[in-house]
Length: 130
Image (cartoon, rainbow, N blue to C red; front, side, top):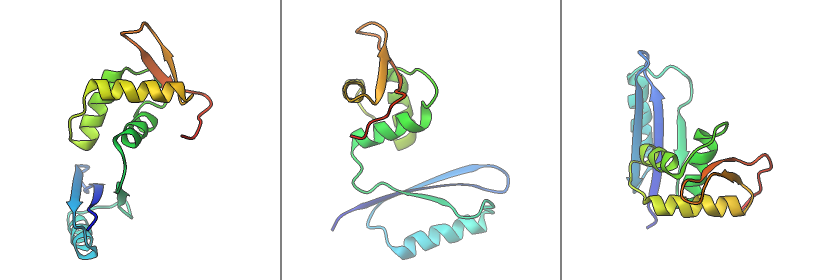
Protein backbone atom coordinates (compact mmCIF):
# COMPACT_ATOMS: atom_id res chain seq x y z
CA UNK A 1 0.00 0.00 0.00
CA UNK A 2 1.33 3.43 -0.91
CA UNK A 3 1.92 5.73 2.04
CA UNK A 4 0.52 9.22 2.08
CA UNK A 5 1.85 12.42 3.58
CA UNK A 6 -0.23 15.42 4.61
CA UNK A 7 0.64 18.64 6.36
CA UNK A 8 -2.06 20.79 7.95
CA UNK A 9 -1.41 24.25 9.39
CA UNK A 10 -3.87 26.51 11.18
CA UNK A 11 -4.12 29.39 13.63
CA UNK A 12 -6.34 29.35 16.69
CA UNK A 13 -8.36 32.34 17.89
CA UNK A 14 -5.37 33.58 19.94
CA UNK A 15 -3.06 33.54 16.93
CA UNK A 16 -1.10 30.42 17.92
CA UNK A 17 0.11 28.45 14.93
CA UNK A 18 -0.38 24.66 14.84
CA UNK A 19 1.24 22.29 12.36
CA UNK A 20 0.16 18.67 12.09
CA UNK A 21 1.99 16.21 9.84
CA UNK A 22 0.54 12.82 9.02
CA UNK A 23 2.50 10.04 7.33
CA UNK A 24 1.41 6.53 6.53
CA UNK A 25 -2.04 5.10 6.05
CA UNK A 26 -4.11 8.30 6.02
CA UNK A 27 -7.85 7.76 5.93
CA UNK A 28 -10.77 10.13 5.51
CA UNK A 29 -11.80 9.48 9.12
CA UNK A 30 -8.37 10.51 10.43
CA UNK A 31 -8.47 13.75 8.44
CA UNK A 32 -12.03 14.41 9.69
CA UNK A 33 -10.93 13.95 13.32
CA UNK A 34 -8.12 16.46 12.84
CA UNK A 35 -10.47 18.97 11.21
CA UNK A 36 -12.89 18.52 14.12
CA UNK A 37 -10.04 19.21 16.55
CA UNK A 38 -9.16 22.37 14.59
CA UNK A 39 -12.74 23.59 14.82
CA UNK A 40 -12.84 22.84 18.55
CA UNK A 41 -9.61 24.83 19.09
CA UNK A 42 -11.08 27.93 17.47
CA UNK A 43 -9.76 27.90 13.93
CA UNK A 44 -11.36 31.04 12.50
CA UNK A 45 -10.09 31.61 8.97
CA UNK A 46 -12.47 29.39 7.03
CA UNK A 47 -11.13 26.36 5.25
CA UNK A 48 -7.87 24.90 6.52
CA UNK A 49 -4.88 24.76 4.25
CA UNK A 50 -4.24 21.09 3.54
CA UNK A 51 -1.23 20.23 1.48
CA UNK A 52 -0.72 16.81 -0.02
CA UNK A 53 2.90 15.86 -0.59
CA UNK A 54 2.47 12.35 -1.91
CA UNK A 55 5.35 11.41 -4.15
CA UNK A 56 7.11 14.77 -3.86
CA UNK A 57 10.87 14.34 -4.38
CA UNK A 58 13.51 16.17 -2.38
CA UNK A 59 14.31 18.19 -5.50
CA UNK A 60 10.66 19.26 -5.80
CA UNK A 61 10.60 20.17 -2.11
CA UNK A 62 13.74 22.31 -2.46
CA UNK A 63 12.26 24.03 -5.52
CA UNK A 64 9.05 24.72 -3.59
CA UNK A 65 11.05 26.19 -0.67
CA UNK A 66 12.97 28.46 -3.06
CA UNK A 67 9.76 29.67 -4.73
CA UNK A 68 7.90 30.32 -1.48
CA UNK A 69 10.59 31.66 0.87
CA UNK A 70 13.09 33.41 -1.39
CA UNK A 71 10.91 35.18 -3.96
CA UNK A 72 12.53 38.61 -3.78
CA UNK A 73 15.96 38.06 -2.29
CA UNK A 74 19.38 36.54 -2.80
CA UNK A 75 20.03 33.37 -0.82
CA UNK A 76 22.76 30.80 -0.24
CA UNK A 77 22.73 27.00 -0.16
CA UNK A 78 22.91 27.21 3.62
CA UNK A 79 19.79 29.44 3.72
CA UNK A 80 17.87 26.84 1.71
CA UNK A 81 19.18 23.99 3.90
CA UNK A 82 17.89 25.70 7.06
CA UNK A 83 14.54 26.54 5.42
CA UNK A 84 14.16 22.93 4.21
CA UNK A 85 14.90 21.50 7.64
CA UNK A 86 12.51 23.98 9.25
CA UNK A 87 9.72 23.19 6.77
CA UNK A 88 10.04 19.41 6.59
CA UNK A 89 11.62 18.55 9.94
CA UNK A 90 14.28 16.37 8.37
CA UNK A 91 17.98 16.83 7.74
CA UNK A 92 19.37 17.26 4.23
CA UNK A 93 23.07 17.46 3.32
CA UNK A 94 24.38 20.85 2.21
CA UNK A 95 25.98 19.14 -0.80
CA UNK A 96 22.53 17.93 -1.93
CA UNK A 97 21.12 21.46 -1.70
CA UNK A 98 24.11 22.83 -3.63
CA UNK A 99 23.66 20.24 -6.38
CA UNK A 100 19.95 21.02 -6.70
CA UNK A 101 20.54 24.79 -6.82
CA UNK A 102 23.25 24.31 -9.45
CA UNK A 103 20.82 22.24 -11.54
CA UNK A 104 18.12 24.94 -11.19
CA UNK A 105 20.67 27.54 -12.30
CA UNK A 106 21.71 25.46 -15.32
CA UNK A 107 18.05 25.17 -16.35
CA UNK A 108 17.47 28.93 -16.08
CA UNK A 109 15.25 28.80 -13.00
CA UNK A 110 17.83 30.63 -10.84
CA UNK A 111 20.41 33.38 -11.33
CA UNK A 112 23.77 32.90 -9.64
CA UNK A 113 26.44 35.28 -8.40
CA UNK A 114 29.53 35.15 -6.19
CA UNK A 115 32.67 33.05 -6.12
CA UNK A 116 32.75 29.32 -6.73
CA UNK A 117 32.70 28.37 -3.05
CA UNK A 118 30.25 31.12 -2.01
CA UNK A 119 27.51 31.20 -4.64
CA UNK A 120 24.33 33.12 -3.97
CA UNK A 121 21.14 32.66 -5.95
CA UNK A 122 17.85 34.34 -6.72
CA UNK A 123 14.83 33.47 -8.81
CA UNK A 124 15.29 34.17 -12.48
CA UNK A 125 13.07 36.73 -14.19
CA UNK A 126 12.12 34.08 -16.73
CA UNK A 127 11.12 30.85 -15.03
CA UNK A 128 11.29 27.70 -17.12
CA UNK A 129 9.39 24.50 -16.41
CA UNK A 130 11.50 21.45 -15.57
